[in-house]
Length: 383
Ligand SMILES: NC(=O)c1ccc[n+]([C@@H]2O[C@H](COP(=O)([O-])OP(=O)(O)OC[C@H]3O[C@@H](n4cnc5c(N)ncnc54)[C@H](O)[C@@H]3O)[C@@H](O)[C@H]2O)c1
Image 1 (tube, rainbow, N blue to C red):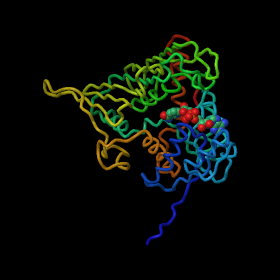
Image 2: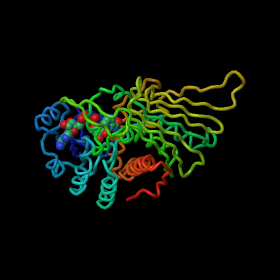
Image 3: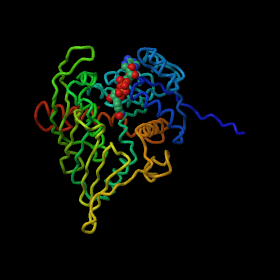
Image 4: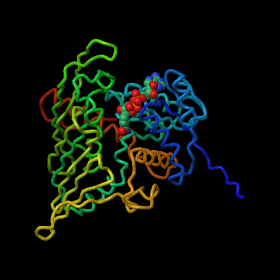
């Protein structure tokens, strides 16, 4: 019988145990079995509100302790990394308190509800020298890394265009209730909530945004309140954008909508090059469609690249191609990158500065819509 030495540990404090909090917890539980790590995450403390909710979630997700007070969590000496999976308005106070206590921070998107907060968070993290990661998990898809390799290697020639969309239908019914996602103070609206994902994907593939021309539309001017009555809606249901990138001569067209009837997760793009094209949708995210020009007459068209062990990170989950990863696996890859950054192995690939770049693009699109003009990113404050 062999007794194994205990690997050094890293204390994880998780705030929020809803949809994303649970995804964070599953990823922290799973990551050590999938990837080699310098320090194993220890699920130390979970905070939620009210306290009974924290206790129940901590028990089911395998945390050692629970609290109803998130300020105690960020100060707790056994917590090294604070994971924030709460509604948007709480990201800034929680992250700033965690950074002040010297903790590394893993924060859900969007980074903050105001650009000022996003700038303050980025400055604080830089000054403190802590590691940060923001939950733009769709960028962690091995096939999205492959798409970037194809673009950068010139395999499909020079990039000539990009059409991107993030549409979901969860607010398509005009009677879908008013929620925190409809609050302007919560960075509500389709653009910040889901449009931020297609902006992050376009930036990942094409580089930094130079200027934007956008239009935000509120289609349903009021919605029912869960407790009765109705409330006016001022945030956008959908947004259309023309986007120019520093490194490319074309104008990309992007759109987002939470009125996308029939769509559950249409985070999708078509990217054209002089010698080929790429086509992708998150609804079938283990497939990348690749077109290469030059086929003989009658044999042209897109082929399907199936995700497999030849693509970054896939092999850690499964040795066989085509067997497919799932949403929570993307979160596990994200947590691996966070832990590697904490270990000093590689910089975070979506730190607060990266998320601020997306927040600045969103701010520019809002300004463009309000003033009905093109807006250069240089006009928007930066950290
Ligand atoms: N990366 C993604 O793909 C993705 C998907 C969905 C949501 N999100 C983001 O995740 C965040 C959370 O969204 P969600 O869908 O998980 O919401 P949710 O409503 O399911 O969960 C929010 C959690 O925060 C807790 N909470 C609220 N106030 C609190 C407080 N004061 N102290 C402690 N806990 C508190 C709630 O009790 C709940 O457990 C949002 O920022 C959202 O934009 C990201």
